[in-house]
Length: 291
Image (cartoon, rainbow, N blue to C red):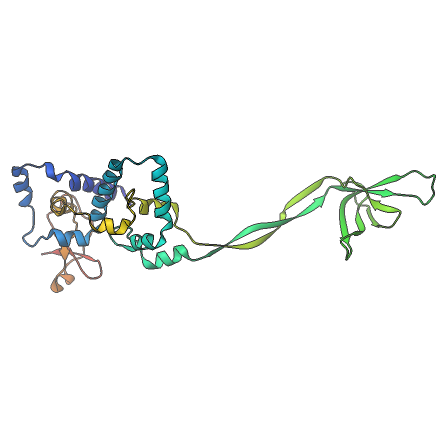
């Protein structure tokens, strides 16, 4: 959303909630700015974002008035987030969520991501105990660097090969026997993160943080059926007329659908505020000048 649109939306909020404070003279002056065929209902239909803003403001004021504790608000928000049936209807409603059915299906489609499963561990070295058959002989220790261990069918180590010195070139290869056993101290282990295996993990889809935050704007605290409650909100339709007069008209907002013959009129280009040109929108959502 560009800076101008942010300004218009911010101004829209002010006009939508502040029109009741205008006096009679101001009302009459603004009324003169309406085209003869202007309809607040049609203007609202063409610009559901304005209706959404008014409803959001209503919900915000309502939530501030109910006086629930933080624990109650947290519980209510959790219940709202878990009710996917209501969330779905709010999500795809052009006034509330404004998202498409296709996006809803995409959001909840299972996703597959790669998860680290296991990494190959390379020991820095491995101690081997060499026991002589002679009863009076002393035990000697063999140290194998960068050992590669081979296991048998019973998961016992059957052979060890590696390097005689750390970083050296001379290789060694030992077969584990009754006299050559792996010592209790096996040596330092180094995990090679470049040799990690990945496992595909399926996860359920879910709303993104930004999508859920937008949905939460329509959560009325303490209300069990938010959707039914939202539909009962009485809109201030007069405020939308004021919005067109104060904001929409000068910025080139279409105020009605185009007639058949108007669909061939010049398409709206760059609008310089304040414009005196009136605009309509055709069935393809293309804005045209009204002559």
